[in-house]
Length: 153
Image (cartoon, rainbow, N blue to C red; front, top):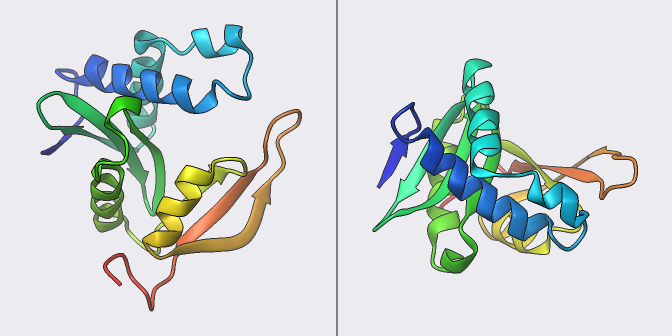
């Protein structure tokens, strides 16, 4: 079940975001920086996004397992708990997020995130050619959903 994040489940969404973010960034961020991403900090981050107009959702099975946000046609913050990955939750969240987009769905990934790249390409996204250069970090690459392919294609 995918539910909107509100004050009743914000800390649980922050916990999912924190655990998955730490796991995905551990290989290239300092241990000190990774530790900063606590449940509370990530809940504050998600609240700020909602205050700025993003809509955030939490995927719950027997417990919260994933989170995603959408602002207009931009999909962000798609995270699934590490122990729940490769079970279709990311695909379910991405399909849901696409259905919530106002226009052509777009998203950004870190250039070194091969798991995300495989998921997005498998579901019809492709690189747009736009990049964000991040000093001393991996660059970000923009992807957009190919209209003729679609998410179910």
